[in-house]
Image 1 (cartoon, rainbow, N blue to C red):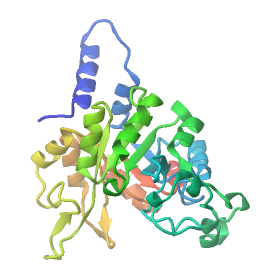
Image 2 (image 1 turned 30 degrees about the vertical axis):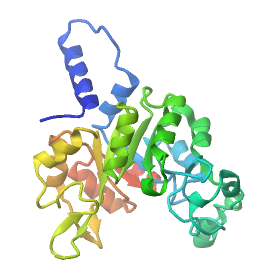
Image 3 (image 1 turned 135 degrees about the horizontal axis):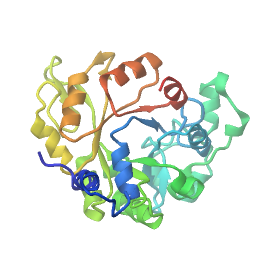
Image 4 (image 1 turned 90 degrees about the vertical axis):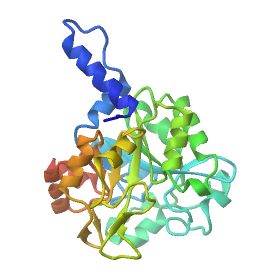
Length: 310
């Protein structure tokens, strides 16, 4: 089985350390991060987004306060080339603006209110402090938490954000996030991950997958971008092909309330060198079920619920 060179290096280093009579070198931060992926990871989806406006400093402050393993975020580019943390391609849902996010300069986006919508949609959680929340830049997030947090960053809609990977890797290197074991980069787009790898081969990558019924045959599941066959047809070789460039996968577990993967899928991925993170799980019963399946982590809007049951 071929494994991602980062994982292989960690495994070799740990084996060599165990075999030697005395340790000659300490585990590096990046090696420790990769080893930690074998344990269970609490991934705060867009921050504490069940309690505060998603992708805002308030949401990340709360999640960090709880002690989550990763702050999860999406990055996109403004029209003047700045990295901002924002999920949707359009700004309408979570701001008082309208139109495509990458049609605006950073200065124009900073004038928007990205918090009041949350109060209007969640009256029981409304907080006046959320009103007027500004869009968040990746620089601002790194400046706030630095190396005291780990970041799980999605290259969002790379086809709409040309130059995204270059800007992201440059920023990660500037803040020394890679060698210090502070970041995972995730994407549904394999080409985007491979571009990141070309720019810096030491960035740990997560291949996102989405399984749903085929349009031609509703009884057959397929993967959204075709990066793997459907779960019923997936082979060890398919997982190994991902493990050549990625250190894990992120997947949905259900589609329209029906399971699309099972515990066997989780084990098969793990046996082929891929820890499995499942998105986005908000109910405690489902959190417990997936823990029983042996998943390596969960994306959740309610990291407090997940931390309570661990």
